[in-house]
Image 1 (spheres, rainbow, N blue to C red):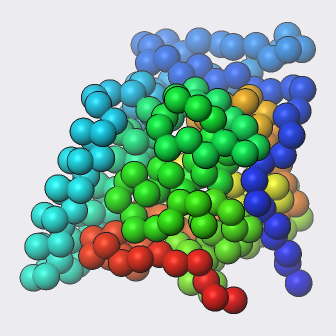
Image 2 (image 1 turned 90 degrees about the vertical axis):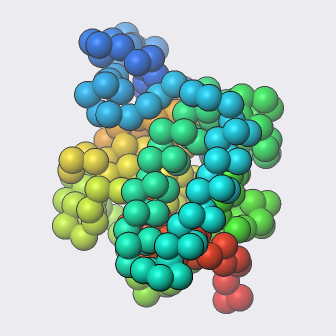
Length: 256
């Protein structure tokens, strides 16, 4: 039996990867505390926004208005609405919502509702950003669940992908064999976050107990991504979840 107990983040480790979050033409090389080169991400090459843009409350208000449009389309053409909304949710989460959270301080008990004002634990980073993206959920109840339970709030148990005892390369191969480009929830031994799958590469977006802040980094080199077990739930590629977002269906904690 696979048991996943993920309530919040672990304590800080000493060696951590530093990720360049500046939008630059040329990627900069950062160094860890041992003086070895650590990988850096280039937002231009990845076509990902790392810098916050616009007013955060205005972004949330825009999303709320846009949901009304998708709901109208959904009533006459559900397939078109879900396909369009999937791309919309991907872009808004990755390029509008999350960038405002980069650099927000991590704390085991952090639960701020405002990016870069207070502290945020890993579970609350996920639940809060999803709520601000327009998902109808209780961010406190979601964040306080085990990783498997959080995943089941997003996707049915039989549709989850659970991997155990794999090397990173084997995990990456498995993920690429079953998933397309998109954003996924992942629950680990003692941590949760988002995985961005883009052009066969895995990126980890999370409130890091290794770096003491919200970061995006290569999953392969993230010390926080090391785990005996990985529970994946689809977000942007999940038609049922996107449908729930459109019609504002409540995402509840599973009864069992």
